[in-house]
Length: 95
Image (tube, rainbow, N blue to C red; front, top):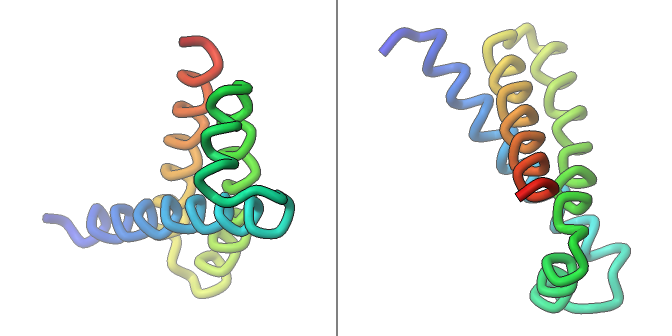
């Protein structure tokens, strides 16, 4: 495996983890319900994509941290994770 590809995969993994963490933090701070109840309500009321989008805001911080450390391929991986999240939101909205 090429070293650049490995760095992109690491960045994408960190980006997806940051997205999950951002979604959890948003639910923890702004929801009165438990995590499970909030996710069930989000799926039932068709705003699960919005939760994913709000969680993706944390990717912005991770992206700039990687840029500051001159880890450009990992930053590309975070962008890839953000695109994956956007595709998930697109699928949830239209299908």
